[in-house]
Image (cartoon, rainbow, N blue to C red; front, side, top):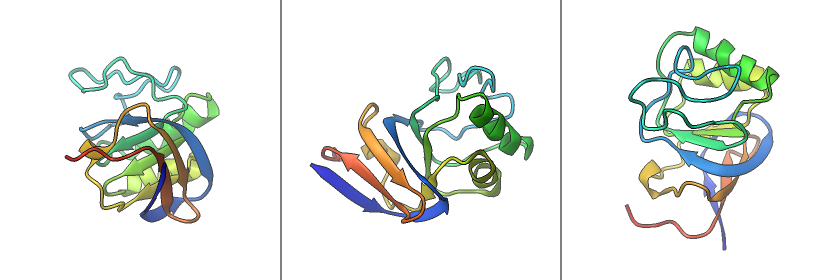
Length: 139
């Protein structure tokens, strides 16, 4: 079953990949290695995990505005997430997604806890929606 979940489009484009959910905010400046796409922030729930090619879902970004350029560098190095889903987009992540050509949405109305890692997901930033293959567990 494919669920269509509406949100708000932030960065245009359409991309698919396995879902990677972070319960914690992400800082791209010093929190993600732009050469490998691996989360390096000590103590982060996804420390040591690659975000490359995933549909990365996390509450919001944190840290310096340079984080936008790290997202761009990840895209140039082919280690960026295929798409981004935020609970609430903020300027650092939105700018990075736009300049990096990474489709992005927010305001889906879903708790991230209901999203299952590894689930195939497609994000359409033009329509402001995601397609989720499967059922959503209760949270």
